[in-house]
Image (cartoon, rainbow, N blue to C red; front, side, top):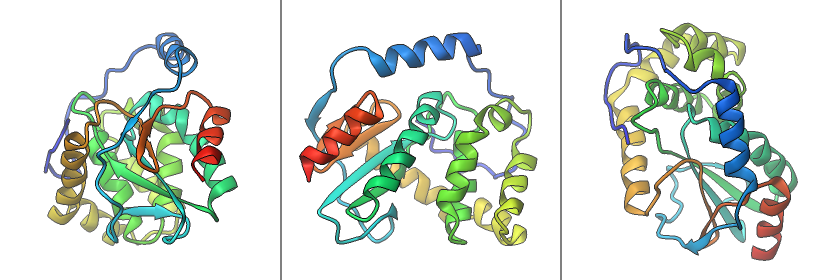
Amino acid sequence: MSRSGSSFVSKTAPWAGATALVVIAVVALYLFTGATATQASKAAPVSSTDITYGPKDAKLTVIEYSDFQCPFCAVYAPILDQLRQKWGDQVQFVYRFYPLSNHKWAVFAAKASYAAYLQGKFWEMHDLLFKNQDEWAGSTDPRPYFDKYAKSLGLDITKFHNDADAQSTADFISKQAVEGKAAGVTHTPWFVVGDKSVLPRSFEQFDKVIQEAL
């Protein structure tokens, strides 16, 4: 797990991911084999500092620990989007940072998303980062891509840069990652529905888990 406080602008070597075919094969295995895992969750309670979608007084909370450079998280992103669209008026969805140390740009992407959050555009940046994951994750410098996404969302670029580079942003991401590890998170994505850690393998399974929990 990475807890880097490095500058938003980095010259770290580019991400060296698996080939597309390997990723597809592994994702298929990850998503569609085995039964849904369920265990008691030790995740920290949702607080006012959490990044959320949906009513704060919702009967049910769905927490996701995620890494923007994780291929599996990118696969789950549209599933979560469908779930937010369906249950967003009844369920509170929570995004928590868990950047993995083997993903070179994960912390920097997290910083970009948090900077967008501070201008009220987290979920929009979230979607762009996952949709364009191959573009920025495979680059030698993701900064131009993050700037492009920020501009497309109408963000104040100077504030975006300052917030992404702020120590408070690095501290927030690190804090969530440390708390996630303490809660037993071992991979991304990691989901908590109510008081249970679960791993639904499809939209249908996830939808059923939510229905049963409500």
